[in-house]
Length: 445
Image (cartoon, rainbow, N blue to C red; front, top):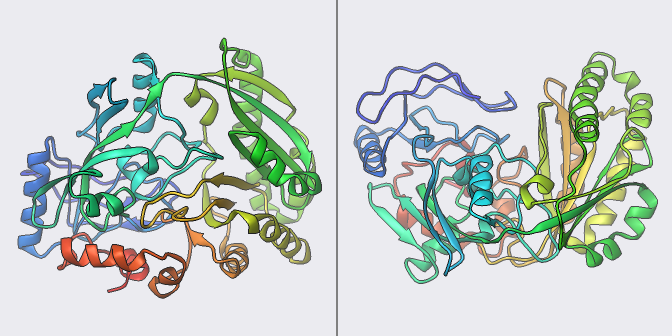
């Protein structure tokens, strides 16, 4: 992910260029620091502030925006990893901020526990995923950040704040999705529940049918999502619902064919061909969209919610009022059909219930998401610009970690609690120790 050379809090070394997972964001910090303790992290922040340097923490670089980019001090939290405590009576687990979601999910499963909902990628750190609003799909269960019950935050003056609904509640209300603007998260307490089973039903379905029946599928399933393949009328749907079990995962051959050969291996070839010869994309899309077949399987949550993503891409995702998502998707399809664009990646549609986090994309409203992607190295600006025009016409809110062009003036209009967040930022970080160009654009100076 990063080519930077890491040092310790007191012995950092000169660094080379850092780049994110997709390769569309780079930065050259003055130094990279990998603190071995919260105390070392606090000292790192204090020292940077004294030197007039800005500080940003970066996880595994899965964001497509420059939210973590800095020309100052880049903090890598990977040494701050692992489970601190499991409280079965309270139904919570406290983990260090640098813990990778993959490791957390596996550790929880060994304890007979699970998060209620999660996204489809688990390579991010828990702090990076929550700070940018990473989410899955759910009728009743919300984003990963909405499952936070407490967190620790190192502020611009090096203090360590403990935040929850009872302790520093105004900070807790905002810092669960803080985009790195309020401080550096050092630990998170998540709500967890006893391990359960999900039965996944994956089924191809026509675009007209899935859009006509969208509200019905949403109402009938705990977790519903679908993918539309541009240049075709084909979609692939996925419905995940709780099950009594037992586990009945896909067989090893079936799993390899679907998850590796088709979803990664063949998909990599398809995108590579499409990048070299864009005119072939519609024909390839019609074939590729029919390659995935219906299947049903049952397993523990993270094995159903998540899947490997080895084909690199750039992504834009907008959160819309749920009642407007079908109209927006139809407009997107019409735009692609009448344009000269050639899109080799499917469009993803997911949902989330309203939550109470100030800068959550689902803050205060029932939400549906539309995500558009382009293969890494393929020009994406024309497609994303046209899609963004549609999304913003519907009052869309951009995902904080994915490509968009919106600024503070626009975002203040679509987030009722935007001013609450920026006022808290002025209080906690008046000198913008945690600032960067991206935050200046989306939050204002």
